[in-house]
Image (tube, rainbow, N blue to C red):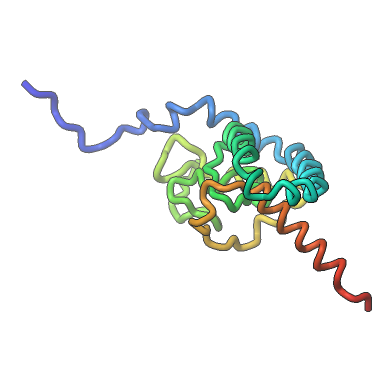
Length: 180
């Protein structure tokens, strides 16, 4: 006699439960958002100081080695999906791409009363975690900003290098503006 088919997935058989170790590190990152915010600020300043080096080598040539390090680091700490447009500094060190619905601007209407996700009942809502993490950060009000839709052409690319190139361009533009 064949085993009966299951037409539902019990809540105890969640993919989140199977990835609990990685998930607990993500929660640690949210709880320590203030420390990580300070570290990232220092790291971003260092990367910006290295802009002449990145430019001399060529951003395209340095992309792959930086991407390997970025993917390993952010994957471990934040369960990063490498969307190419990182918003961790605005979302309390909680990556919105971990939302089963990939919502980048806040929670859906399905957040459970206990703060868990409606799709993954065993997982706390990414956006509840983002709010808690942002309240620990010095720049906690940035969570209120609306994020632009994800540019799919950036998926799998380094956001560290993109942020650095954009900051260097903004700095160069500010230096060229005439004094008033």
